[in-house]
Image (cartoon, rainbow, N blue to C red):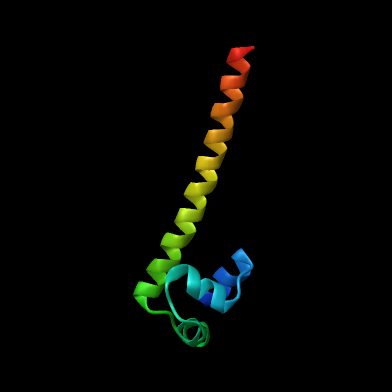
Length: 75
């Protein structure tokens, strides 16, 4: 089972520093968790960040759909 820090950085193409900035942790805290085990609050922060990315992507798709539908109905 791959470390959540390494997995997330690979999935999102982020450095440890970038991930830390995004979820509110120092680069050294992320590096330590990347070698060992991430704390439960850090794991939760990562899960919430990934969920936020997913929801933003869905929102973008729904906005695009809404705009396309509006354009179609105006014709």
